[in-house]
Length: 491
Length: 129
Image (cartoon, rainbow over all chains, first blue to last red; front, side, top):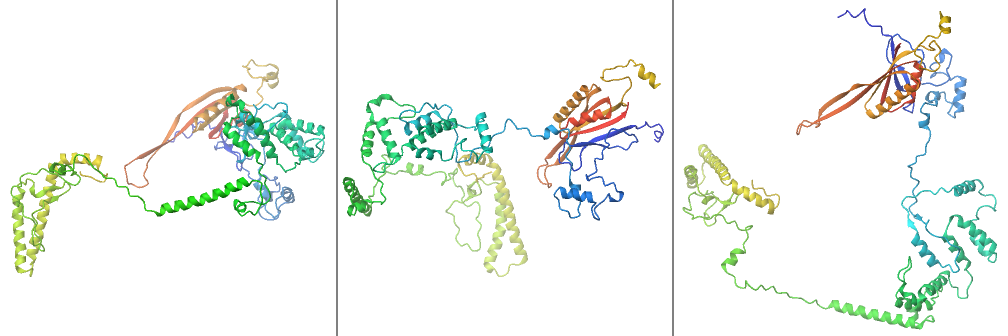
């Protein structure tokens, strides 16, 4: 009990726990904090004032431990101002944290990850891998079409875009940042192409630019430059596109002997008829003048043109269109033809009993087992006061199973029912005689009791019947489950 | 006699470099208790501490694994009393490792400051050697 008081073991140990430093953003910045109350000191451990949140200069003045009130000491104010914080009497230094080189300094330094994905391209830019494109020496006739096809054949779409870190390029990029607006000797002028075009005869310039450009760009710039040089003023204001088309047509489609070459990479041969058609069109130079001319203008002979054949045709076409339109309209105005389709089956032209019966389906007709009716009026039907004629002709189907209840084999209860029914009938008959003058309390009670009895008997009969026909309902449920809607529940 | 001690180096088990007869600082028995809910981190920290201590040639009693405590909470799933009586069985596993060393406190401080892993609680108990 209390024996342990004196002989207790001396508790000469100290327990420290690692806690994250108060006010530290980095959770790994932890210090040891004493967690027990023993009288045992460990001089070298947890000596620092870890829980002192104010890292301001130790205001040695004893009275300034809480500097919330009164003006701040000068050095504190100076420090606050140095940091750029407002000098409004509040000691912002208490919110500061000294950055200490923690043991996890390595963890806090930036290490570029090797699995980082570079910036994806903007949506309107697509990257292709053109490393397989061979940039040979500039050919004698460099036409855009062929070059484009060849380039397109060799390039492959790129899924993962890696920034090409070519040391030379990187160096150049770095340099360009530094010496941007500087010398004109290094680097490219922005409009070097135009400059080159102006000084067309100077071949030395061209070569220089070619070399410089070929460093990074590839085929296209060469092609562009070459075509820019072709921009001579021509008599009929032919565009660059016309020239290119001519070259293309002559070279590729001019030689119909080369039909059996098959499909080259990126080039395809058109059938000769198409080529001929194209030639036709090629010969006609469609001048794009400033005014826009419609065929109607030609019809009214407002403007002259060299292509009168075309005009006639267009006129003809318009006339034909009008005719067709009229025809179409007339057609729709007429009545539609009514197509009669007579269904004639070979066999059943004459109806006989069998056919009639077979056309009935069980959905409409419920053939129960029809026995000889026996005594039709075994059970007297309930006669309501309002009813005058008793309907005996129809076999009524009752209950969920839709069975002709009156004609089913009755049991002993039938006798009881008859008995019960009779007095009820009697009272009802009395009522009729009296003309419903007075229905005394007892009579009312008797009537109600009779009704209750009937209902009770009916319930019992129903339950019995249900039991009798349970197997049938099970079968019916199976069928209904397959065929009928899912809302049908027979059991 | 202090002088005699210094002159005559006692034949002690000197596996430690820089051992000059007398102990520079008093060695303490240090027990480091590591506890965590996460075994992986815990084992990692354990391993680091052990390698650190071995590197400093300290007497070490390897990580003793205390049986894990499993805290159970069994509650009804339903916020109301309705429905089938289903129960949730929550558990929290606490793993604990103990490492005993004999060294000076600042060495221990060094070692423990290096290995930092989130979720692992470190408790150091220092006692007389």
